Amino acid sequence: PCAAWLPTIYQNPADSPPTWHTIIARSSAPTNIITPIPIDPVQSVDHRASRKSRFLKMFSHAVSIFVILGLRQLGLFQHLELKAFDQFMHLRAREAPDSRFLIVTVTDADIQAQPDKYRRGSLSDKALLALMKALETMEPRVIGLDIYRDFLVQPQYPELASMLATHDNFLAVCKSRDSVTGSAAIAPPPEVSDERVGFSDFLVDTDGGVRRQLLAMKPEPSSSCTTEYSFGALLALNYLAVEEVITKASPQGYLQINDLIFTPITDSQGSYQNVDSRGQQLLLNYRSLARPDQIADSVTLTEVLAGDVNPESVRDRIVLIGTTDISYGDLWLTPYSKSSRAEDQTSGVFMQAQMASHLISAVLDDRPLIKTWPDWGELVWLLLWGCIGSLLIAGWRKHQHYTLSRYILSLLATELSLFGTCWLLLSRYYYWVPWAPPTALLLIIFGILPIYEHLLLSPSKVNIKEAL
Image 1 (cartoon, rainbow, N blue to C red):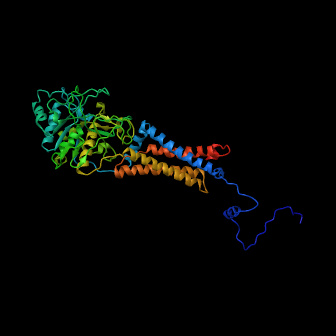
Image 2 (cartoon, rainbow, N blue to C red):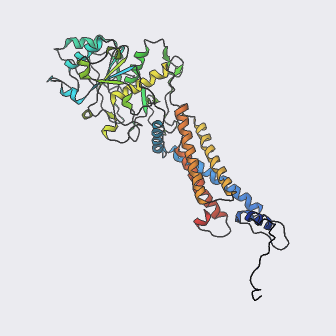
């Protein structure tokens, strides 16, 4: 009474109360009174518009893939790819140091302890003679001097000159001349024969990092360093000469040891695009350590001369001699460098050990070399991730609880899956596959294409927020 205008609901207490889904299902049933209006305007277009929509999606995805491929061919993704490669190397499982090496470091204190007024460079003739005598009694398999000596031994040390000339297990370095970069050559020790000299040149990427190693190259005719083999390769070959291995040239002219062929990279291989591929280059598979200078045990020059070195740590090993004094500038950026500061870089003698260990481990330990897919394989890889992104977009559009936050989480999960797959392929199977191009393609598919398609196909103008 007096309230007949108020709405009234009657419900049998024995009936279950309705839910939203039952109301929606009931309202979508055929009725003669009202026809439900579709929420998505794309659903109301005719078959011709639907075909146009599908064609537009396929065309836009194809254009996106070709754009990504073009940018990659121009090398615009190379910097990102190299940084991703460094992260993959960081995340690999740790390996043990290579017990076949011993590093003799010439530190700043060792240099200052050499009173010889005739010292040239970081190691005087007197100190080198004493070091050679000390190492000779401990029977190393190979001795490598990673210090330039482009001068004759002083006349007062004829014994040293004789040792350098006659010891077949002693190897020295020189530096090749490169007219392209403008670097000058440094001659090898005059007493050492050419077959026991290797060039010390490193290959540096655009960001200054060392991720490749040279096995061999033809020297320039005017260079005073005429050797064709790198110092690291020479160390490995001399060490392997005692083992039962067969070293020869493959039918393609590449280095082959037993059944292992060291196939060099090309100028556009993997994530490298238009790189200088002169000589025979390999992707350097660093030994996975916290720092590259942990490749092997190391002792100082003073410790060796004082007799504080266990002979068993030298016997039948490769002994590398090199300076670690930062004033000599023999420092290099690696995938493990946290910054470009000197303390985060690696001395050249440890880099030579990494490169020699890379070759020896591949032959004796079956440690794989880093490989890349052919161009068609990388294209299939890019198409695969493009299809994954498209399928996820289609699935989200049909989802009833579609929200922007879940959409972004889906994108992040897909990108994380891509990163994890790339890391797994490198750490487990030693394949370096593209990461940056699929990442860019997924961002386009998830971020730009849905907005573009919605704005183009919607019968009314919508803003970006409504499109998302």
